[in-house]
Image (cartoon, rainbow, N blue to C red; front, side):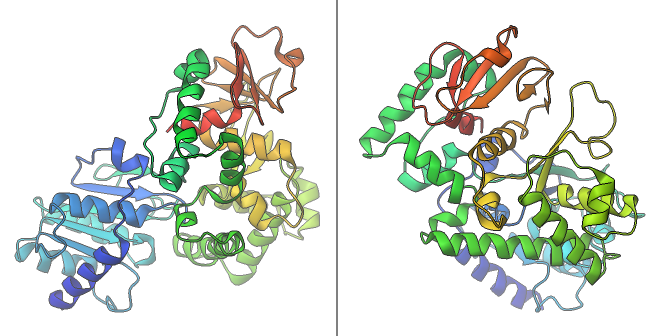
Length: 410
């Protein structure tokens, strides 16, 4: 059995290996014996885990010290993860990856047993964004470190698309030195005979998921993204929440389509319950929660609200701009695209809420107003740390910052 798993592992390592390294592997050292990487479908979790395994073996996919397991592969059958780990470590194995861990029954119990029994074994696992390590009686919160990975930043898109290297910047650097930073990026693109605004517009449509690089046809990219959304609901959510029925999943899809064509909006629970013919408010709010857990939507609350944002969210958005182009039944509004991008980029490592004036309050300090290049300071003129974030702008000045630069936060 273990010989066949080694064969499959080497095959997967060869197929899934990529030379481009996402922000996560560049910035996140995994020191725990049990690390779980979660994130939306299609953002590159598998590729990242493969790179980590090969880093450990110094690029040798035939090393007996590493093993990659696709948890839902038919060859696994009824084998337990524990049995696999036991045989692997008996043969001198040191690093094992369980990909798509949420697809395997009793995964939390098995990971707990592996962690407790084999102290010299390092375990990496990946799972759905909705994965809950505290779920059930096998609480992994004291054993596992959980890391979240999101889609490609605009910076990463440019690196992968044009084979260049670009640094990331923190929020304070962007606010204080954006003109110099923009100039450096633009000059690097000039060498490749590329312009920043057309590249940014393309990224907004087909650049958030790494598979854009293998799928140059825009229609195929959008079809793949739409299919991944269906799989997230029908397979990933169903694995994490087995109580979901076929009818429940259909209602969740209908809710997502409604959101895609209405964003940004403040939900009227009673109205939505009636429109979607959902029996009670608790069920409707649970569906909202599942969509956010799966990172298909993102919600925003006012800076003064202390309740959980899904109890009374002030605004709902799709998770990223690519989704707007792929699943909305009508052409997305440009203002919505801008706000969705800004929120998606900043929420990754910052607290973002709705201010009294302006569009977004970040870290309870910076107020940002989002708009086109002709946007004025009228709405935030009284804000000490107020900034205009403008689309269709190559370089800014003073408190006027190009929108595309917020794609360099990671």
